[in-house]
Length: 256
Length: 262
Image (cartoon, rainbow over all chains, first blue to last red; front, side):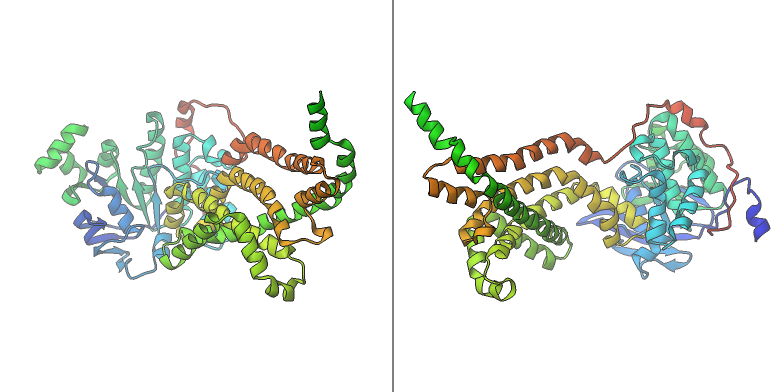
């Protein structure tokens, strides 16, 4: 143990992601059905990218996974167990979510942003929470900015703090909801590099993205959604180079 | 220049003003501040309860909060003060003794809490939904999310409105005199009024007015001055930085020691 922890692990932390599966999930906002009978499997330690036009239900799907919005039917399985029969707070602890607009706490420093849930949810001591938070900030390259508030950080830095905040909880699955859509172009790369690193180190990731280059390079599976359904899914090479459905062909011709 | 002399004699009789000054300071000002501050403190506590109830998802909390707010905000202050002050006089006698002073504070608190509750509710609801979603996504409970993240941000935004509310309470505290205060319990208005009746001259009331202004005007300006800081919180400002510098910020593989926290 002591010899292990003294060794610097050059490729950072190894993660052990869990499997995630959606079975026939439908979701609605009031009377409006936004997700229809979506089934999807993410193997442990793999990355699935969800692409599709706006309004296709991609973000809603992520919110259904950690029950920020309750599915109206179907089931979501985390590590083989239904999340719908467990307490939402217990499920969310095991699933990290990264938002398009970061949603950092503006009156907390970067370090406090990461440490807050460690203290409140994991009941860590102040010292332990600070140490873990600092480790995660170091991992995303922001140790020097630990005492900055979000408004004094760039968008890219803010998003990396948000990723550190989610990682600090030791999640089994990470969800990314258009994590780079609100960033200036030169800052996108830093966040994507970080995400690719997580994928390489064994995190299970479900990534809603408009970054087709990222999806092609990093994803093990790409899912194309439109009008609340999964239209096509498969390996990135197949989807991007040999799209079968006319919808996907049209979508790719618009974005590439 | 007869009319000018009359005017000065009526409103600015320094002799009469000077005579009432010690009472104004020792009795009037003290009581006005005690009543106002006590009513504000109770009003803030009750107002927070009303606000939290008002944004609850349960209608059994929401509706009572709504009705409470509508009643105490909709009635004239003087009516509430008289109804509470006289209606509960017997009950109050057993607890606080014969003085109507505590009931006056209570009535002002109820009125204040209705306004303050609305101020808090507006503040809390103005906090971006993403804040509570971020908390919930991390596994925090609704209560923890509100207490640690949402409410502090909401309250900070409405601090200027709260100071304005305090100013309103200071002015309304003059109405407590309707309940009939003991000599030592008189607030600014009553001290001025008594002296005005005694001397047959309005100058003591003008003196009372000056005391009110001494409390309220600086507060008003303080609010304007701190408005921006209240909204944004304390902050260190950093010079702008090129986004290009950030590209190298992440070394490809940070050397880390893990194992203690997993």
